[in-house]
Image (cartoon, rainbow, N blue to C red; front, side, top):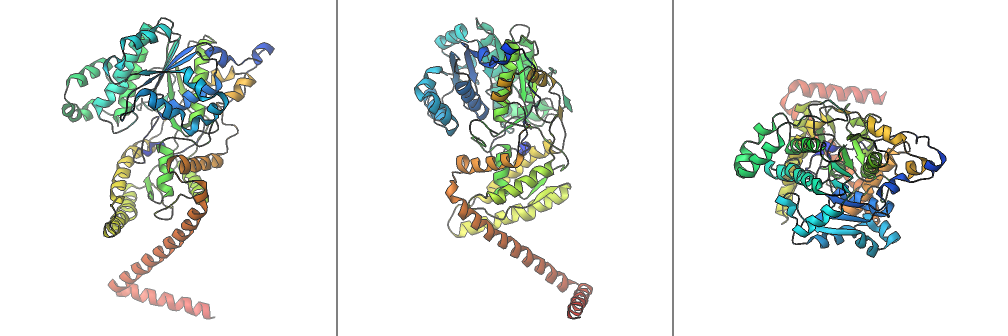
Length: 542
């Protein structure tokens, strides 16, 4: 269940656990150290390079830098041209996101734009798509690199995934080796890239193949040839994301002998918990997609080990942990190079609890225009799950699409459920397997925090109210993803009540229909039914 998962189809490998990664009391320090914000000191006057800043986690990183580390000298953001918008236009769009409202109010838009230097480039292109001038500027100025650019689609074509995730990392490392004042290169990986390891420790592991050879192969082979060989190349790994991220870690490990490089492995990054905007996300990955799908009444069954658990990390906790690990390396001169930013060593919430909490909250905060009353459950039996998919997903989808067609609208439900079923394939792989993670190095770093840092850069979950967090996620999804304003909640609650009774009467109808069919087919069943009714009536009349 790797770090990021797009679209409702996208891979419910990330079902919500909503637990942050790290807990422990702040360490004891002397009076002078106790009054310092040593993370601010670590970044004061530094020039930072950030890739992947247009993605979900990248936006939260950027916002944290701007709001909590105002003494950063410069942030260089590598942004590619996309959908006809140049790099600067895309930055303006990012800064106009609700996520940045607080920092804009505190510092002003002009100050933010002055702190950020947009560098036009593309990690998937040779030479990173950089101009000679921009490359020279970066090599002469950058002190810390955060490389987070990657495709997080599980069904991404192998060639695309290799060129972006693996070759892109290789080229970023080559750029870092040219940087004259480099203090640290941080590679943001995922806790779910070494899937053969049932317990992942904070160390490097051999890559599943030679990353250099894989890069060369996909560079000269045609796309269709690469895709024909994908299953053979992946081996036991279930998708191109896990494969290419594991290859990337191998490249970073090679470079550790030449540059100060670090691997950070966040687990599944989920919506913001506290700062700056509770519940905020910009996509329908994992937990959000699951809650929306279930809340709309579309998802009614999942094949899953209900006693298992997953590992999730709120985005703000993930970013605080990234800052903590950076400070630990630069300020405290700690030579640790690998950190697992995970939660399950301290918090384990089974799937059953997650589903139950989610069900209650979607009843309190319903979504607009639900197609059916939210319900369903996880199934231990694949056969039962497949039967439920047919009865509660596909047959209703065909029925609704037929109605839409007759009414002159475009049918959509079958397409939605085909995408959901594709997502189930990924989800089931992760949900029915169990991984655990050692995060001892992160805990050690946390012990060094003083009281100021402990509060400002929270990396513990001692005060988490899971129901409150779930509800914040749903409310934020309504506003920022579905464009459902708070004033629509009363109407949504009325519609939910209507769909409840529709659900009840539909179940009664089908139950009576089943009894009628059985009674028509079987004389013995009809006799049994008649005798039972007679017995009940006699009992009532006594």
